[in-house]
Image 1 (cartoon, rainbow, N blue to C red):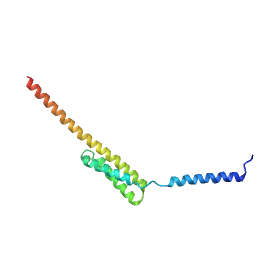
Image 2: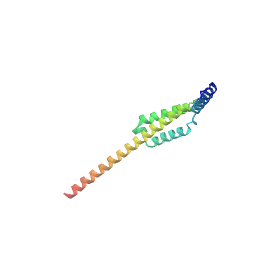
Image 3: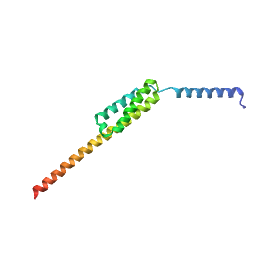
Image 4: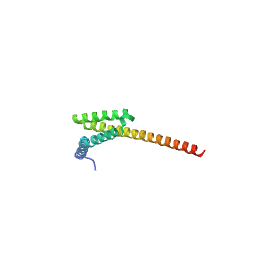
Length: 128
């Protein structure tokens, strides 16, 4: 059975409808990144509380800058840019927080080792 022009037109119309439907679905935007902004703000706050400004000032400054840029982009209505900056701010703040906690734990470890060394000296002196 030969293919008619009417059949080809039907296939073209169905294909065009599918392409237009996919294009419209791709254009549908995600909701505003309010959750991402809130998470970034909380991450920066946690890093502040962990004294990251002392132990990881470069990361904390980057996180604050990215959070500010995310808020500016959100105010402009540029949700995609706001989302990217918010996610980046949260990641940098979390890393700053982790580095700050690591520094605090290393300080505590050094204190414990010094205490152990002092106790060992005292035990050796008492045994002689």
